[in-house]
Image 1 (spheres, rainbow, N blue to C red):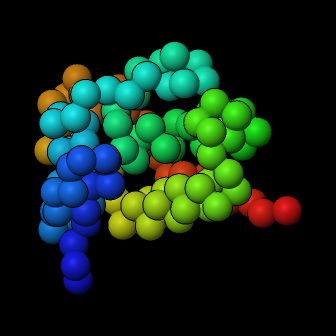
Image 2: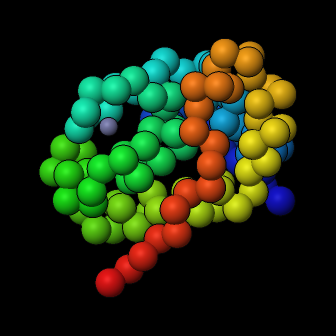
Length: 113
Ligand SMILES: [Zn+2]
Ligand SMILES: [Zn+2]
Protein backbone atom coordinates (compact mmCIF):
# COMPACT_ATOMS: atom_id res chain seq x y z
CA UNK A 1 0.00 0.00 0.00
CA UNK A 2 1.64 3.22 -1.14
CA UNK A 3 -0.85 5.26 0.85
CA UNK A 4 -2.79 8.27 -0.33
CA UNK A 5 -1.03 11.18 -1.93
CA UNK A 6 -2.46 14.68 -1.92
CA UNK A 7 -2.84 15.55 -5.61
CA UNK A 8 -3.16 19.28 -5.05
CA UNK A 9 -0.53 21.14 -7.04
CA UNK A 10 2.65 21.73 -5.08
CA UNK A 11 1.65 19.55 -2.13
CA UNK A 12 2.33 15.84 -2.57
CA UNK A 13 1.96 14.94 1.12
CA UNK A 14 1.10 11.29 1.69
CA UNK A 15 -1.23 9.79 4.25
CA UNK A 16 -1.94 6.28 5.47
CA UNK A 17 -5.68 6.60 5.27
CA UNK A 18 -8.02 8.33 2.87
CA UNK A 19 -9.74 10.01 5.81
CA UNK A 20 -6.44 11.58 6.91
CA UNK A 21 -5.87 12.78 3.35
CA UNK A 22 -9.29 14.40 3.11
CA UNK A 23 -8.98 16.00 6.56
CA UNK A 24 -5.67 17.45 5.37
CA UNK A 25 -7.23 18.81 2.18
CA UNK A 26 -10.06 20.42 4.14
CA UNK A 27 -7.98 21.95 6.94
CA UNK A 28 -4.52 22.59 5.47
CA UNK A 29 -5.52 23.88 2.06
CA UNK A 30 -7.56 26.96 1.37
CA UNK A 31 -11.01 26.51 -0.12
CA UNK A 32 -11.41 26.35 -3.85
CA UNK A 33 -13.99 28.64 -5.38
CA UNK A 34 -16.00 26.65 -7.90
CA UNK A 35 -15.34 28.11 -11.32
CA UNK A 36 -18.84 27.30 -12.48
CA UNK A 37 -21.04 28.59 -9.63
CA UNK A 38 -18.58 30.42 -7.33
CA UNK A 39 -19.39 28.32 -4.28
CA UNK A 40 -16.43 27.77 -1.95
CA UNK A 41 -15.64 24.07 -1.56
CA UNK A 42 -12.65 22.36 0.06
CA UNK A 43 -9.79 21.81 -2.36
CA UNK A 44 -9.07 18.31 -3.67
CA UNK A 45 -11.61 15.50 -3.48
CA UNK A 46 -14.53 17.69 -2.46
CA UNK A 47 -13.84 20.19 -5.21
CA UNK A 48 -13.82 17.37 -7.78
CA UNK A 49 -16.96 15.82 -6.30
CA UNK A 50 -18.73 19.16 -6.35
CA UNK A 51 -17.67 19.94 -9.90
CA UNK A 52 -18.73 16.59 -11.30
CA UNK A 53 -21.93 16.08 -9.31
CA UNK A 54 -23.34 19.58 -9.14
CA UNK A 55 -22.57 20.53 -12.69
CA UNK A 56 -22.80 18.85 -16.05
CA UNK A 57 -19.74 17.42 -17.74
CA UNK A 58 -20.15 20.06 -20.44
CA UNK A 59 -20.00 22.88 -17.88
CA UNK A 60 -17.06 21.27 -16.16
CA UNK A 61 -15.08 20.97 -19.38
CA UNK A 62 -15.88 24.55 -20.38
CA UNK A 63 -15.07 26.22 -17.06
CA UNK A 64 -12.12 24.07 -16.05
CA UNK A 65 -10.63 23.88 -19.48
CA UNK A 66 -10.57 20.09 -19.22
CA UNK A 67 -11.11 17.34 -21.74
CA UNK A 68 -12.64 13.88 -21.68
CA UNK A 69 -9.41 12.33 -20.40
CA UNK A 70 -9.19 14.82 -17.54
CA UNK A 71 -12.79 14.05 -16.57
CA UNK A 72 -12.17 10.31 -16.65
CA UNK A 73 -9.14 10.76 -14.42
CA UNK A 74 -11.19 12.76 -11.91
CA UNK A 75 -14.00 10.22 -12.02
CA UNK A 76 -11.41 7.59 -11.18
CA UNK A 77 -10.33 9.62 -8.15
CA UNK A 78 -13.93 9.99 -6.97
CA UNK A 79 -14.50 6.27 -7.31
CA UNK A 80 -11.31 5.24 -5.52
CA UNK A 81 -11.82 7.69 -2.66
CA UNK A 82 -15.56 7.01 -2.43
CA UNK A 83 -14.89 3.26 -2.16
CA UNK A 84 -12.32 3.67 0.60
CA UNK A 85 -13.90 6.49 2.56
CA UNK A 86 -15.62 5.97 5.89
CA UNK A 87 -17.50 9.27 6.43
CA UNK A 88 -17.77 8.62 10.17
CA UNK A 89 -13.99 8.39 10.52
CA UNK A 90 -13.55 11.59 8.53
CA UNK A 91 -16.07 13.42 10.69
CA UNK A 92 -14.16 12.38 13.80
CA UNK A 93 -11.04 13.99 12.35
CA UNK A 94 -12.78 17.27 11.61
CA UNK A 95 -14.51 19.81 13.80
CA UNK A 96 -18.27 19.31 13.97
CA UNK A 97 -18.90 22.52 12.13
CA UNK A 98 -16.64 21.59 9.24
CA UNK A 99 -17.94 18.03 9.02
CA UNK A 100 -21.54 19.23 8.85
CA UNK A 101 -20.77 21.39 5.85
CA UNK A 102 -19.28 18.55 3.86
CA UNK A 103 -21.05 16.28 1.48
CA UNK A 104 -19.67 12.86 2.31
CA UNK A 105 -22.31 10.81 0.58
CA UNK A 106 -21.16 8.25 -1.92
CA UNK A 107 -20.37 9.66 -5.32
CA UNK A 108 -23.13 9.03 -7.78
CA UNK A 109 -22.31 6.08 -10.02
CA UNK A 110 -20.47 7.08 -13.12
CA UNK A 111 -22.49 6.54 -16.23
CA UNK A 112 -20.72 6.35 -19.50
CA UNK A 113 -22.72 6.56 -22.63
ZN1 LIG B 1 -2.12 18.67 0.37
ZN1 LIG C 1 -20.16 24.79 -8.47
